[in-house]
Length: 89
Image 1 (cartoon, one colour):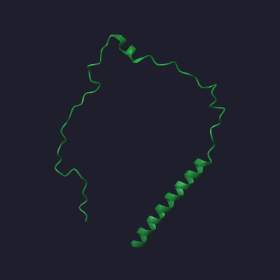
Image 2 (tube, rainbow, N blue to C red; image 1 turned 180 degrees about the vertical axis):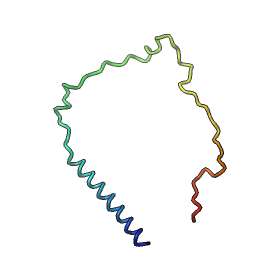
Image 3 (tube, rainbow, N blue to C red; image 1 turned 90 degrees about the vertical axis):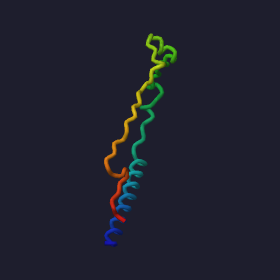
Image 4 (cartoon, helix red, strand yellow; image 1 turned 120 degrees about the horizontal axis):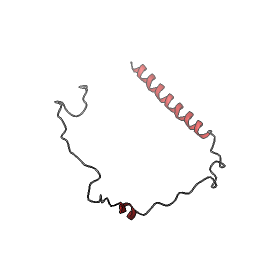
C-alpha cells in the first residue's frame, strides 16, 4: 500500500511538472501579435464622457435612495455542526 501511495504521488508530481513545462514552452513559442494589426492609425478615439453633474439633469433625483436593499435572513439550523467532519482520527 505504501508503494502504491508513493507511485501515485510520484505520477501526480511528474505529470504536473511536465504539464507546467509544456504549457510554458507553448506560451513562449506562440506567435506574437504583429505590430501592423495594432498600429496607431487603426485605433479610434472615443469622445469624452459628460461630467457627473449632467447625469442628474433629467429631473429624477435618486441621491437619497439606496442603490440596493440589504435584508438579513437568519441562518437555518440543520441539526448538525456547520463544519465538515468525517469522524476519522
